Length: 60
Image (cartoon, rainbow, N blue to C red):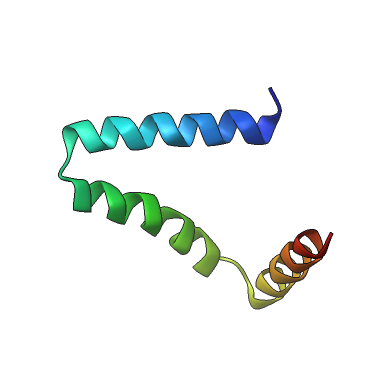
């Protein structure tokens, strides 16, 4: 498995565990909130670079 696939599988597993232990809306806030908080923690130049790379990959 590639590194990205391992991370994705781990995220799914953690999401399922959270759904079992917590109400669905709390699990949803955690699953959505963590990536948003990570994005907001980036510098403006890092955000621009991330958007540029994402657009290039989508254009392939």
